[in-house]
Image (cartoon, rainbow, N blue to C red; front, side, top):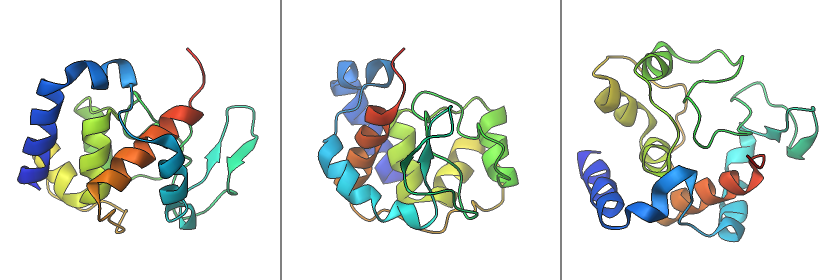
Length: 144
């Protein structure tokens, strides 16, 4: 986990502009394909209640407008560890999102210093897929 965070932090330092203001460095089209694995538990529904991807699932939260926002932002029943992350001010930028989806519990423990477990047990195996999923979710976000 630390290796992943260090690698991503170094990449951010080198190419900081690519990560600024929620900008996604991945391929949104490839992320759309990779996101199909996520729809087992997640969906994307806009603020007006329109389903963009999938249908409401009882397992995981709606992932609409997560980019740049607090890591626990909906009425979903998050784990104590995820809530601790929100209390600590964690937001979904590319670095945090990629680290989280590759090791949800490990990322939250390291980022918060707290004990516990994430409710998300699935791990995205390839960093490239995680970056692309972030880009896809960013592409679905409302225009600011």
